[in-house]
Image (cartoon, rainbow, N blue to C red; front, side, top):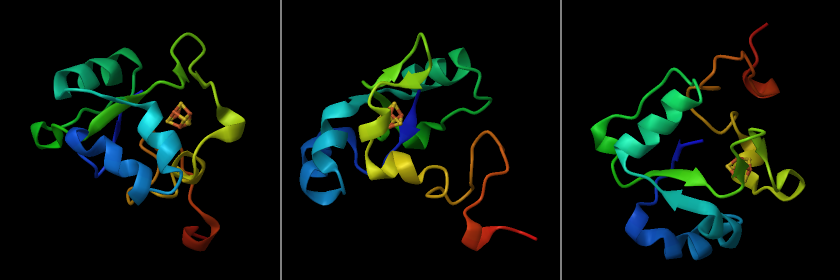
Length: 106
Ligand code: SF4
């Protein structure tokens, strides 16, 4: 419902060249202000908020169906979505306990 990318809003077009699946990602991202992003996070009950220093880097996705809370292009979603949450340093933001096998604790 809201996510951070290293690429700032004014450089969305560069995503096409610099990111894997860049064409798909550049077409799906919707730039958000921090208040807009935090309103979405609260509305969807994530229990987290973005700090002001994230301004210019947070996005919504056009493929997220707010009614069903499902991805509208699930079978064709980009690699960054397939890799989540393993791609995040802190793991799943919802503390689901998921970890890639290489990082799994025994
Ligand atoms: S999984 Fe689907 S809805 Fe979520 S960010 Fe990726 S493309 Fe968008």
